[in-house]
View (spheres, rainbow, N blue to C red):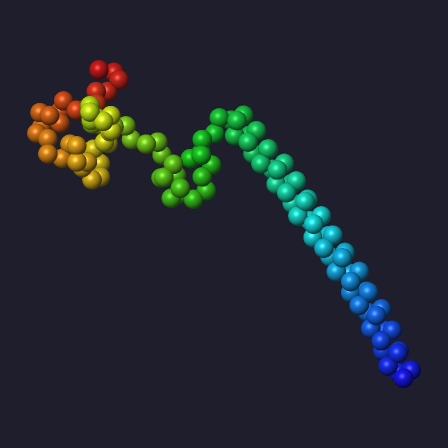
Amino acid sequence: MIFIYHIYSQGKSIMSNYDELYKQHQELTKKLEDAKKEEANKAIKTIRELISKFDLEPEDYAVNPHIKKTLKKKKEFQYKDPASGNGWTGHGRTPGWIKDKSEEEREAMRVKPDGD
């Protein structure tokens, strides 16, 4: 009987030690997450200040060269549908509103450059 009581009392202290350590682990995990969020917010603020200070554009700091290609400015419309106001750059699939038009009709839909 004494042996069983001894094991039980040791088990209780072992569990309370485990519970205490687990509680500390939870508290430290929360502190770590809070500190990470705070540091990330500081870093983002610094990055935004630098971008603003030097008037940087996304293509200026894109790390992946494939991203630079996608961040280029959109091409201006070469053709514009007078009825709907939709535009087409002249690249890619031809839209239905210009597909069956003659060369003269297409030329009438061509967007004139600002300098002309």
